[in-house]
Length: 206
Image (cartoon, rainbow, N blue to C red; front, side, top):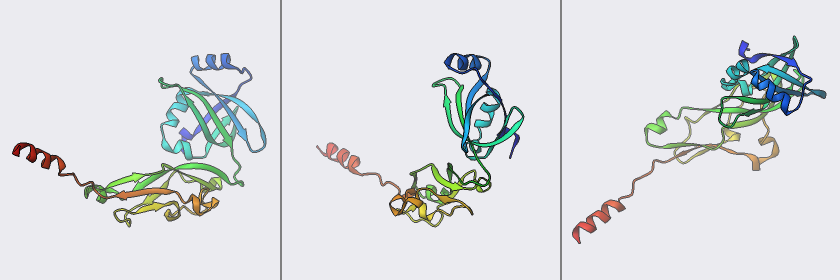
């Protein structure tokens, strides 16, 4: 765990829209921490620290540590509200986790070995960018690698074809075969139509 995934947070009692505006003007981010059967608590974090951390893809699929008034709490980021056009984070939702309890979250998909298809003029269509998983916190992967080297033109790789890390299961596959989502499809190269050339020739003849 890198330092950027350990954030200092302060408890806050001043709630409401006005209080949140004052926090943002002071370069702070209002947040809430909930889960594990405990009462939600309202927090404040330094905007610059959060902004730096959220630039890393792994921030969204890693176990984070919040130092809440000096006491470490392990959690996941569950929601982030951003300003519609400014580079400002408006609010954060964190969910507590327990090392002995399975968690559910989404992790990004990284597709590898697509270069040969692209060189041949084929296209690679990515149907999903994240996979919903369940696992213990210690088994949480930063991403799921999807290797398409053995696919053929026209074939689709589904969730059931993805090799998940040890201790990780797919939430969708647990619902049944009807939820075996398409992940990646390799499409044949498009052949340009000669219609335009034919029409040009006909026009010339006329």
